[in-house]
Image (cartoon, rainbow, N blue to C red):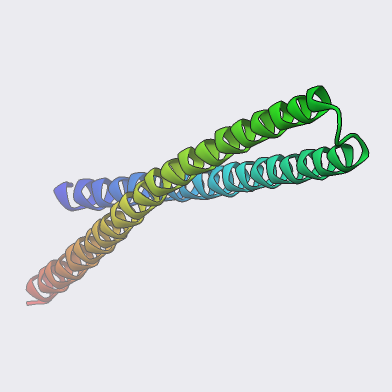
Length: 150
């Protein structure tokens, strides 16, 4: 009957919405993991670049003290420091890029959360409609029984 079809349709809609919600939750978790991984990697690379820069500067300072008369050695270490600074700048730029990707991921997570809320509301509405249909069916069954008894 049409009541059973409506109940089945409501149940199917509820199942589809529940499945979509689970898929979106998994996607959110994956985006969050990727965001943490990207951020961690960029932070580690930036720290490594800074350490390399400081080490190069320390070596340059030691070498300069040891060879004050050697302009070539000082120039070489200065070049290394500049290269280390450029490397640090590169890693800093990459960290900013990761931060931008993190912002995009956060926006995506927020959108997915909004969609999850809508999906939950739709699932709740479908369940309420199914319950109302069941109550109507019970009402009409009771009336039919009462009519038959008369």
